[in-house]
Image (tube, helix red, strand yellow):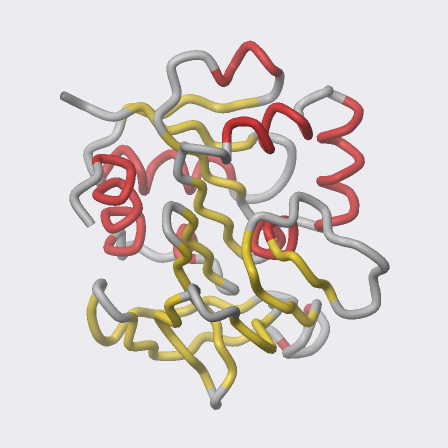
Length: 191
């Protein structure tokens, strides 16, 4: 049976995530309102600007829906999606969704002009994964139950906590669907 995964369509590289998930064997739909969650087995929250994305979630009434969805459904957050999922964000009073026991530093590798690519080894996914970092955060601290999947210069850039997966970089901006394949397997309950 094919799993159905939604891509939050408020901001970011939505079509690139859709393409990567489809190449990984999932049925994919773009999520912009509460009704779009019907029938979904998992959700991807792409990059963008986390504060803007939060405002749009509130505007379209889907913030609480995502929190409810997260109770038992897998979510994969990349870049800003990772920030939205964190329990602690440097320089911010409280979390957005607060799903993952991680402390995050926003724009940790520098501004847009400091964007770069790095060769990453990702646990359970493989070696030589091209990480595309654009105004990327990193995880300063991961809680006890959080599995670190990848680091760059001793900074945590990918992790998993149960049915939550995060990456500080943009796997959708490469032709390598391995991380999306791993998420599809997570949604299928195979990993």
